[in-house]
Image (cartoon, rainbow, N blue to C red; front, side, top):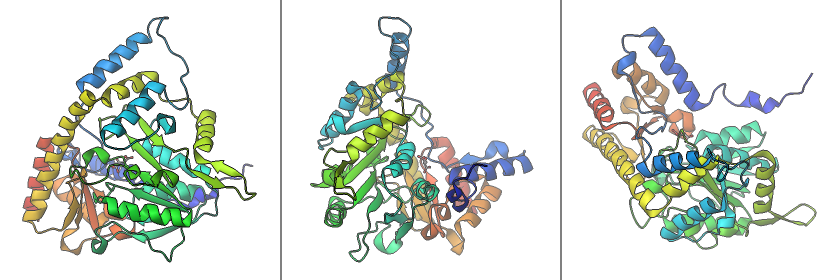
Length: 400
Ligand code: MLT
């Protein structure tokens, strides 16, 4: 009989967004007459189609695959050089230098933030904010790793800062934050980098929402802070930036500077370890997708993406307006597609989830799914259409 990974007994039966989908389906089955009027502002899935240049590039790359002269089989596991360079160029235009050799192309920040745990031993002190994107917690739990939490609360604007009395080895940060929409400024990130360098820790920095930063002073990468290449891995994706949730493209930056000592004193490079891991377990993102991603990452390609992002940010404005009108405290919606608000009437988040679904057929994400500090909060996404977002907020306005 196989001995199973019993750490799976320690995670909830289903992943947060799978659980929400399950509850919505159950509601639809019970109320088929209401199914058509459900508005989904739960999972951060985009509704705008791919940009023109992305679609043209997909067609062009597909045509290349149709003839022997340009057909491509296995590509480099790290990603094609042209797209790694396109990522580095994108960073350079945003004022940050990264070496194309430190860029690893993948199929999602979710996969990479989950898989990166393989590089670290079980007995690390892993520091995770609460509330947090559940993938960080679930993947470490599946690995049998111990997690300690730092509180994100109204008092610290949902941006926990280092506590010198806590000695962490691995620190997860996400900015702009999922779920709260809060965004660290450079000074705050500098404090985290200083802490990591002083404590020989690694920061796993998720910047999946960087393209939504609208305040020019706010950092869009941890590498905007000096010294970060010695202590941070950064994860980013085109899912939200370019509407690639169904197309799948992401990149992880593992600088060569990230070198730590093994227990026998030998030096181990996280870059080389990740390279070894990826070349052993991953055969790369499809060429067609990488080709399209490279077009998206050009100046022209990104202009088109920004039109879609402005579209979503108009939804964020509509959601924020309604919450302001109702005097409901919230964060996010300015540098982030997410709005995180206090549940009205002292409700708990899963209670509000059911209440909204039952009464106005609006689906959101209960804050409790992101950690105990989210128990009385709720997340709405701005990735819907204008029409549906407006309709949802009109229903919300009438309900409260
Ligand atoms: C979310 O809604 O938090 C995200 O869409 C989940 C993800 O990116 O995996």
